[in-house]
Structures are given as C-alpha cells and as structure tokens.
Image 1: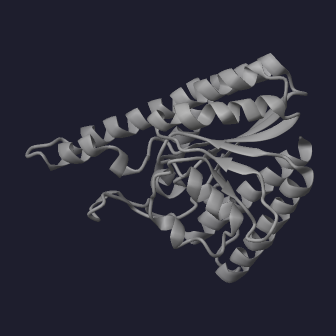
Image 2: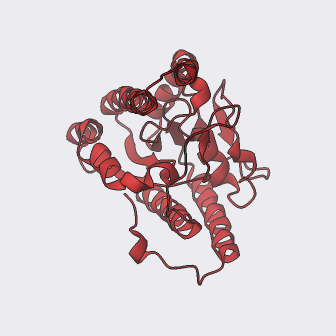
Length: 275
C-alpha cells in the first residue's frame, strides 16, 4: 500500500523533474483512456478527495493550489485533458443524500460496458470537517474531551467508507463486465505516522473481505484489484476558520509524497492495459 522511506529516492532529484515526469505520465494515462475508451468511475463518500483526484489526473502540475480548498460536488463531474477530446472519467458526489440521484446511472453504465476501471477513494476516516458541523460544535464545548471526540469522528468516517464499498461491491458482483478496481487511500500526509494500522485496516479487515467477495463472484478473469495510498495535496486538516484539527504527520516530506504519486500513476497504467 505504501513505500517505506528507506526505499524512496532522496532529495537529490529535483522536485521540478518529479512534477515534469508526473505531467508526462498523466498525458500518457489520458491517451490510454481516450484511445481505449475505458471508462473510469470514481466512488467514495463525501470529503475523501474524489474531485481532487480527478483534477490531479487531469493536470497534476497545475492544479495544486486549486485543489487545496474543498468544494462539495452536487452532480457527476467529467474530466478532460484540456483539449477537444473528452476523457470518460466520472466522479459523482459522495454525500449520502446525493448518491440516490447520481450513482444509479453510473451503476447502469458499469453494467453496460464490457470493461471498466473502478476507483474507490477512502482516507482512513479523515474526511473534510465542514461535513460534520456537530463535531465542530462538540470541540468548542467547555471541558470537551478532544481526543475521544476526534477518534469517534475518524471511526464514523471509516464506517461511511465501509458502507460505500459494500454498496459498490454488491453492484459489481451482479454485472458481467470485466472490472479492474483500485482502492486509493488518500490523505497519506495525515495518517503516515500510523501507516501500519491503516494498512491493516484496509488490507486485512472488513474492507478487504468486501473486495474479496467480488473476486469470488467474478473470478480472476473478470476482476482484479490493487491498493494504493497517496497524498494529493499535503495540508493540515482544518476547520473553515483555520483551526488545525489534524496536523500533517511529522517526517512526511515531498519525496514521500511524489514517490506515491508516481506509484498511483503506474498502477493506473497497469490496470487500464490489463483490462
């Protein structure tokens, strides 16, 4: 799921060269998508980074500032390469009350395609704070037990992620399409210090049992899955007023970030080619 720091190339390679390589990788990815006509459908609860991922894949070297602020998606977004060719990458809103309006269409699309790539985005419960007004109210109460409140917030986020993957896997199991799936664990810069726990949660718990159920239903010829983690934008997780609630992990630097961004791109290449 992640690359340990001791195997990451150190800062001797310039950041500019990293970004340049990512840009070329993104263009190669879009060529594969548009020529092969492989639809990519991005699922996940609200506030985990789905739209940010779409912007990153579109133009990774130019979108960093634009991606820093969260805006709620209210309809399915479609990303393109900045030219006349529209790439088929669909990112629906993740808020529960909006899924009923947007997700059924994408489930139908999956069923009609011969092959597709599903990206399920999670973030170990580190969802944007403005989707939890009750949490912000709790934190301002006199005598509030901050640690317990925040742990409960993360636990609720993980439960939302499990609810989504259960729904998505249930639909994939019922269709005949050949599906590749990648789970992207975002906000790596926030949970890096306890990355072993995060890996265990996704790869050895309820989440992976849901993924394994697809493999059992469709077989190895009809389904393939990979885990990847990444930080798309390294930021403290703050309230709208700027109060830091979850700070970026100590020791997390740009070398770690870019190495995992490269791994994400490489995994997408491999899955699209394999479909």
